[in-house]
Structures are given as C-alpha cells and as structure tokens.
Length: 338
Image (tube, rainbow, N blue to C red):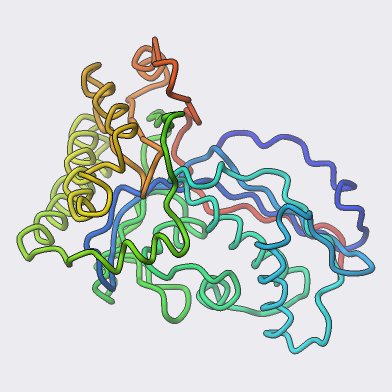
C-alpha cells in the first residue's frame, strides 16, 4: 500500500471522538451486460486515494464544495438513526480521486463519508445498508463497493449466487462477489487521461444512455464470462502477467462493444481511442478504458517496465497515476471515545 501523507487532525476544527477512513480508487474493466444484474470485473488501486475525517463538533459542518454530495448522506444517516438534527460533527475531505475519470471517485467518497458518520454516531449498520441506503451506491456494478471493503480484483458475476470460495454480499440488495483475488504487488498500472476529451458521462446522461442500450447477445455474454473465468482469473492467481494483460485487454474491448451505439465504438470517443492506439503502437499490453473513461489503464509487469512504456507521453495526454493494486480494504482509524 502506498504511504498516506500525515494527517493533521486539527484540520477538522473539532475535538473528542474522531474517525479517519482512507480508501483507494477503482478501475472497471467492463460490465458483463447492459441490463440488470449487470455484473463485471475491476480492481482497486492504492492511488489516487480518498481520505475522510469526521470529528466531534458543535454542529454539522462540511466543506462548501462538497455540500451537495455530503449533505444528502448526512441527512440519510439522520433519518436512519431517528435523530431530529444532523449529527454534531465536522466532515473533512482531505483528498479524493479526480471525478469523471473512470476511477470510481464518487463511490469511494460516498462510502467513506457514510461509514465514518455511522462509526462516529455509534450506529450498527451492515455494509449493504451503508452502500445502498446511506451512500446511495451499488445501483449497477458493485465492483467499487465490494472493493472498498475487500480490496484486490473483484469479479461480480451478476447471477445472484456466490461461487466456490466466493464472498457473499455484505448486505441486502447488492450483487454478490463471485471471486476476489489479490494481484502481485510488483505489478503496476498507469491511468492516462486525454486532455482534449470533450465530455464526461454521469448522472442523468448516464441513465439516458443505459436506457438506449440493447442487452448483450447470448454469444457475447458467454464469451465475456469465459474470458473472466478461463483467462483473467487463472492468470491473476498464477501471477502470469502476459496472459492477464492480454485477456484483460480482450475483455475490455469486447465489453466496450456493448456500448458502441452510445459512445461511438468500444471506447468513448476519438480522444480515448487515440490513447488506446498510442499504447497499442508502443506494444503496451493490458490497456483499456475504465468505465466510461476518459481514464485509460495500462498494465506493466514492474515499475521499470512502466517507466519505459510511458516514455515520450504525448503532450495532450496526462498521467493521472502510476500505482499498484490495493489488495487491502479501506483503513479505519478511530481516536478518542464517544
């Protein structure tokens, strides 16, 4: 796990009981289908990280630029607890992943805020309730939701049943994890973002695009599951980098075809496609688009391989992060007492 910077707890302007949560980011390799129960596979990253601190205060407070995101969560926590006022605490967001980049930043922030508020208020809440009812997440894929509590690479089969060794859902109304796998610590993944990408997809626009999609054909659905179960997962477990990279690229491209009618191809627009082509021309394996993009991921077998593969990055492409897989769940630190 990448080292987190030292936190000055006095930044919260509160005292007494304090909860600090640190989570990673999520890459999504693609869905199994465009309709419920969706399913999919992805992995948690150490960086960029999300850090949230909740401390005792005289009234509820949070940063103005996060009010629209944190305020509704605090209100749902209030309703769940039966309190008449918002919790008396200060919520500070020390860092998050960049939004609308395919890193699942909204999910990680919402889960960290919801869980830290519950811990601060000493509420006994299962993880499924935190995800669905309080954080309002897990409406489609729950790779990032399960990844928040487990880390590693998450395969969400979307069939409502956990496989052998699978991890059952932590609460009601979220898909189960078919399998969770730790990836080698020495592997690296870069996330690149084209600076000339024209638009991000989220919210109502995302819902409208999903409404226009056709379900996966039986043939494509079968091949996506085969790629996961016969290629990606065995390669990950055995630490076979080339096989993992090749099968991840194939899966991502095929899953992307399910969205071709609303994003112009397997990838979301010309700018993202150009980054994919640049990586392909350089012989970089394991590349693909995370979620709707514009974040593009590229896998490397080592730090040295990553540095060589990313030499001469085009001027209009930003390196968002070069990091390792987060094989651990989010970390929780509690100071003081209620």
